[in-house]
Image (cartoon, rainbow, N blue to C red; front, side, top):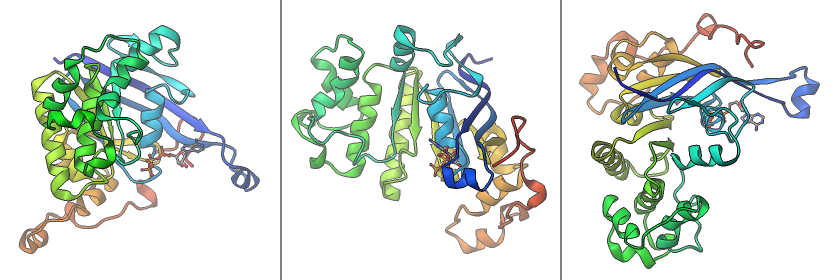
Length: 291
Ligand SMILES: Nc1ncnc2c1ncn2[C@@H]1O[C@H](COP(=O)(O)OP(=O)(O)OP(=O)(O)O)[C@@H](O)[C@H]1O
């Protein structure tokens, strides 16, 4: 049995709604309604869900950027829920994040070399000069990139820089927040290929969040589907793809385009459009009902 690296147990996050919504009688937003996930060492969990389903809140809460309303986060066997101080810093050094937009996630005033040194500087860790070249080699960028600025690179190259920066402290877990959504399809495939290669070379785990089930499935060993703040489906990628149980997962699968019209016509019924009905809504949130 594999070793769990990150586990959340019944994670709940409530937000206070804006005043206009409170005037209409909504007193709480249930962004996460008891979400439990597990990521093993060297494995990838993909999380998909529509806009507003709670994906970003899940990431922010497990990273400690939002305080959980209830539930726990365990990392490498330690409870890291709301961890502060030195222990919190150590946890954050062992987890890094790659964001969606490589145009805004890299400080335009910093050279690539400075960007790659930044995590070590924040963590007050040693960073040998040769490490910059080592990281550029790993993401297949020329060593001459070290002295350049982000604007001198394409979107895909910038995402390689962001991945190199995420690798700088040799984390156990990289959180990938829509890492290829802003890129062209061919570049998406290159970045997914690079992430797969890096995972094969080192025992890094990924938590890969995206809207696009096809992209997530390509890299993930397991997939979780979020809907209304709940994980409505969770299992091995092949099981979720070929034996989906929740109507929302079936709807997501139906939305994945198949280039050959003969295959499209031959899709089994569960792959044809079928949107969830009222009856398919998740069970009410145990902490006070859905939105
Ligand atoms: N800081 C906040 N204050 C109030 N409500 C919030 C806050 N952050 C998120 N929400 C609400 O929580 C719910 C989940 O939002 P979240 O951003 O996690 O969804 P998402 O699945 O990541 O969406 P997207 O794919 O569009 O980023 C939404 O109803 C959102 O409006």
